[in-house]
Image (cartoon, rainbow, N blue to C red; front, side, top):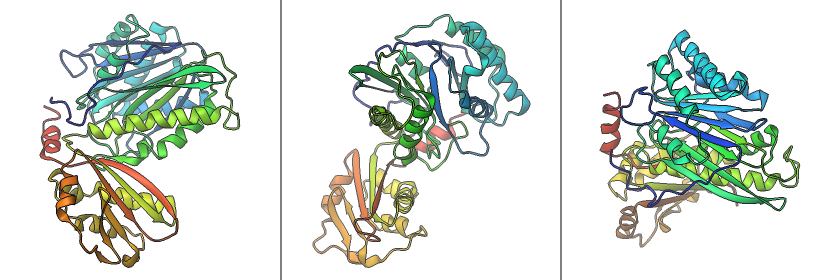
Length: 410
């Protein structure tokens, strides 16, 4: 598959994090000639936070993770790509139990601290024997320096591995945050997104981790869309190994909590943008800013309406400055708007205001901006001053999206 034109020119190197070991293997779950099982093992007493899809048809892996998150501790994470283990009935739950048992045995951790994810085709059960063998093989191949291999092992229709890293200073001690993600289609998160795994050596208790993660996703993974479809398998897990030698951060009231929360938000935002840049068939990365709203929910509703509109997305694909499509997308929401107060600009160029087109509007300038790989759309609702705002990121809709999804199961 051809790499997305929006992919980063160079992949970052993710340095080892103390307390994290990674193993991968080619188990033949669905794909041939590539690794498709990933195992992470964590230091004893590592803390975990998570956010999951709100889909009512979520699969057994998500159900297992939800049920065990309250314990706050993690020993391992196990992921397979190719088959998502969703709507697979009792055998799907048995698959999870066998996967957990295999990991607990191979890694010498408690089953209750093993978290699992599956991604791929819905309705097809991954081969249990291959999965168990894959867990054993990956567990025997652990390394602290295998982040890129892990990012590749969890890919499905992705065209490049998504990785991010950053360093922060907590109590005079440098701590590292690493993250990997997979996601390209079925992207309209209602929690977090796709599959995302973050780890840090910071010493943070699970409640503080959860607070930081839950807050971060609202303006990162919950602010992106590729095709308006919410996955049945969306899972975001954040692990703190506690190996850094700084005072423990137990709650959001602790002095260093803000630094942790800022780091979690920053790495989530970087990975969320990478997911959009790898949207199936994408050639454009669009930022949509809505301001002047009565509240954040109102601003987000309008921004998502614009971002999810097939007509707006195809206009992006064709570099067509048909701004009427944006007005349509704004108007189809149930948000009350005074048209005389509504403003629209594209690429910083004023397009509409005071209920009509801006005098002297240059379509040629807007068309030139829309030919760029990154497009900016800004609208002011005029419902409040200064009002609330929200930003959403999306991709265009091309024939490549159809091709990828028509061929997905072949």
